[in-house]
Length: 64
Image (tube, rainbow, N blue to C red; front, side):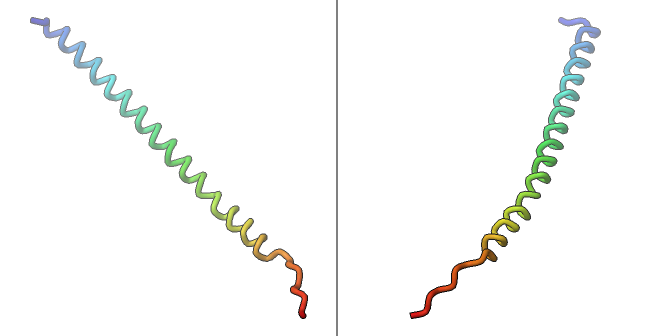
């Protein structure tokens, strides 16, 4: 049987590992959210490019 101080030390180490994992996961979530917000800025640029393309001068059709 393990001594109670050994069990306590193992429990503290396990708790510290759980806290490190939780912090790592929180940072990963924040990073994903930040990347999603940045990618949202692409849509106006694409829309602007399509608008410019749609408004480009076109040759007039020749009448017969």
